[in-house]
Image (cartoon, rainbow, N blue to C red):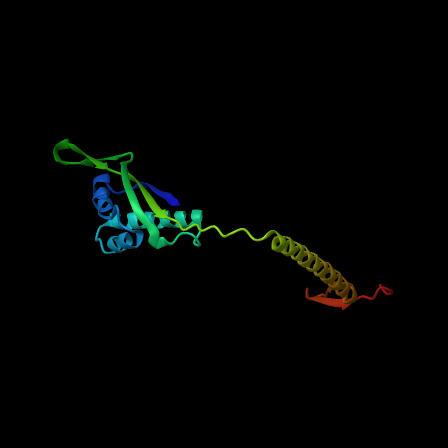
Amino acid sequence: MLVRSTAKLKYVSIPPRKMRLVGDMVKGLPVEEALNVLNFTPRIAARHIAKTVKSAAANALSIQGTDHLKPEDLVVKNVIVDSAPTAKRLRFQSMGRIYRIRKRFCHLTIHLEGEADITTQPAAKSAKAGKSAEADKKAAAVKKSKKVGAKKAVKARRQKSKAPAVKARTTAAKRTTTKAVKKGNK
């Protein structure tokens, strides 16, 4: 079964042109190999792409489960880098001039694909299934009775160990002392 997953990272403060340079390096590689390439790429965009690839892999594993899908089976299918809103800044120059600075942002989307091993187990025989269902019911009933018995025992222990009521009184030096008061005396 084909498994697809995506991860998005929005409003990254790197120009889309610089992000695409790194993104094109890992397109089509297996996830492990892509992360190795990104770890040794000396560009800041590599960190953002590595983080997003890890997130997409985690998404795929959480959707399908680790029983059926291994991280080694995932491949970076596509890396999409879109431009985001540009922040415009002003830089004042000599003789009354102003230069505009455009701080470009981008959105990063990574698509992973992988093949999952889903092997269906043969259905159990009807006689065995019936016997196991009865055994499960009996085990649940025994477990429930043990819980009820344990609760009653705890309640009885609490009632037996109730100590006499304790009354606090203050002395002239503002210290608190305790005095046990019996039910018959006040």
